[in-house]
Figure (tube, rainbow, N blue to C red):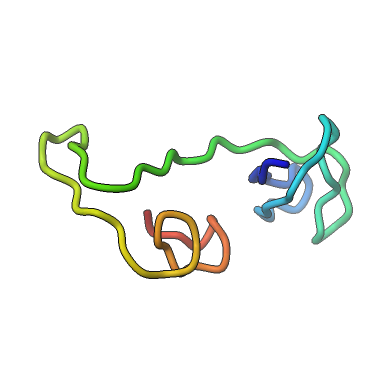
Length: 78
């Protein structure tokens, strides 16, 4: 099951949810049942060129995606 990122249309909160099927989950803040699906940033591990032509160093450490230590993608600096 994939994890999707959402933004509530009613209260503006952003949240992540492990989703099975096509039904969007309700907002945990206000309960609204029509959050917008957000575009997630792609994660690339290892050394690869970025769009500026500079080399991107390998990601290390941390517990989240791509070595990020944030508790959710909303708090990630990547």
